[in-house]
Length: 274
Image (tube, rainbow, N blue to C red; front, side, top):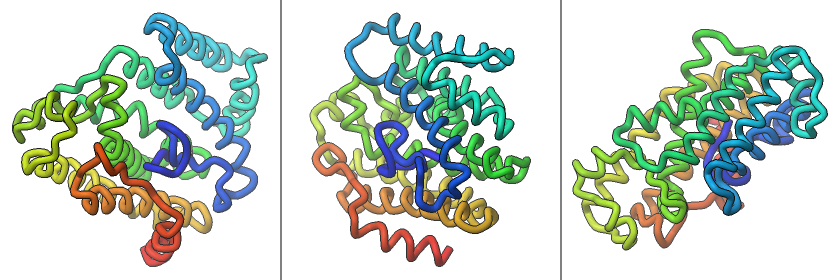
């Protein structure tokens, strides 16, 4: 599950080769991560035109269709992914959803309302959690909605953590109608101006994401052993970043919240106590 500040880029918290993961799950998790990370780079890295980025993502869709048809792949990303999908009986839909979200990042940079943001999260974040649940053999009707709540909340916290970073890419994930409601506009973001309107807007966003994260947190208690502890750590990582957003008084333009070494013992203490 992607969470703020626990890996690299959009997938900063993907639990790749985590010490808490059972050894048998590390290869399939690494294969999923490599797919997601490399596809995300098509959308985000370099200076390629939009048409080129979209074609790169389409090439991944073609590879997925080959795997879905039972064909072999010589692609270095898809060879291990094919093994993971076959051995773990992973569904294909989450992989297509991720590619759809990355393609959307190429062509869409503003979101009219929270429903649009959540629709994006349902394809950019939730598929990762769903794939992890399939790896854990725990993808049932009760667990999937809690996983979605956790993943979407972590994506939202990452957005609010990275407002300034995304703005440099001409992306604003803050719902446009809520910006208007609180009296914040794009010019203010460009200036990095922190005022009461901005703090109220960000407080609303952070508290909503925190509530969503807590609503899914019972899943971390349901999953057994090291897997459950890892998920509790991921939840605590998201909550800790939310705390840090409050601590910097929502000035993400000058003080991007980051997890430091001293945060990990606190997160572990809280995870054990969940």
